[in-house]
Length: 160
Image (cartoon, rainbow, N blue to C red; front, side, top):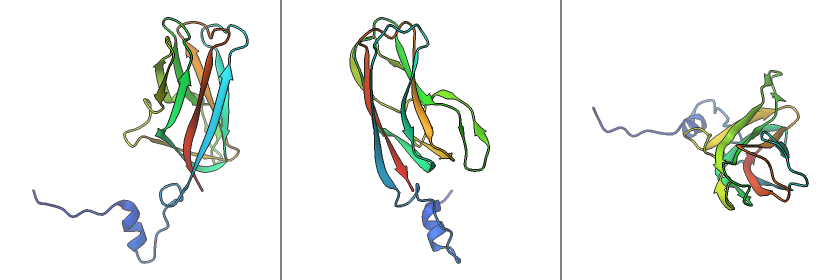
């Protein structure tokens, strides 16, 4: 084995002749936040879900470490999943619903807050490429969404 002096893929692209352009979401992307909040107005059964925010169309990278969710006490055994609805990718291929794509099984039995990203890859981000935007949603399982039960937070993402 030997000591290596490595260079990232993004720097390799920039030094290539001709230059290979990096995606905006990989280099110099604009950091954006999408805020959401919802208070339960009626008790919802196990499996109640809620559309939270529509992320913009195009190429975006959701940043788990910068995204947060806060919640009131929902009661024993309740957990929260965060993901997305089905959407059309830029290339025309449909992406299936993934209700736990960003995080799964957040314990919401007692009031608290958490960073979003338990279900994200090792790089703590999730790339979405959509024609019309991506609807972020929440799913409550393990019991009901109580009257007055609150979730609020924000999704941080890089955009073109």
